[in-house]
Image (cartoon, rainbow, N blue to C red; front, side, top):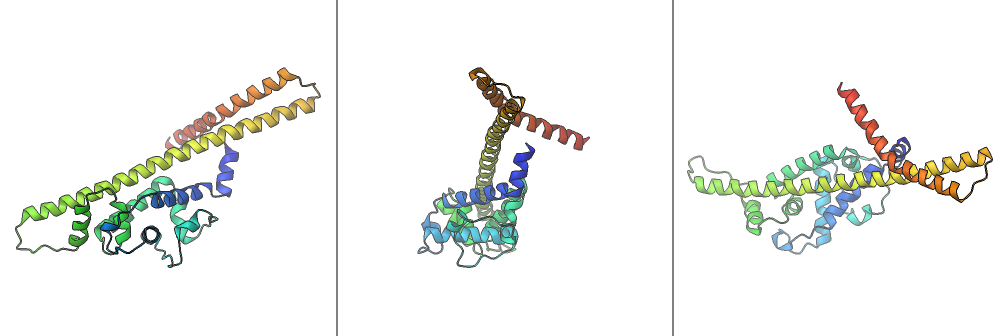
Length: 244
């Protein structure tokens, strides 16, 4: 519905949703301290550094040391450079996060917390091996193809795992966002139709009995259910028109 889309644009609903989902993704993932370079680092400190490094690699903005993820939950979204990532469409935002993940995997010693976060769930041996061997430059005369293949396999396993984690995040976010939109469309459509029918009944001066109230309520429910279907139809027709 146009009214719902206008609401989302005015109050940055999509941007807030993206920001809070990324916050949830980072804070709800348990990070094994045994694979961290800094064994004394607190889990909350790790998560804050994960977010800082993610924002640095996606927007180029450096968050100061006072930043904490806890502040995001109640933060009023502002369209400023450090939040530019969340203003993108979901597919584009995830594409930027994938680029950041590739950078962290290519140089895990430069972005250790983000690397550790992205490889959560991998074999501990793979995580530690790539952390120590990522900067290794093989000798031109080195014919140890077995070792080179082993390094390539380790990187392949870690990069595939990180990609699957990002794919899972994108699927979950798309599911939650689409179902939230549908739910709000049904409620808003039903309420607006109910108010409109009540207004018509009042302005016509007809006496409203119990059956009339029931008829209005049923019509409002049907209108609310049809509203997201009509919206999807309009979007589909618009895409056909643009492609043509």
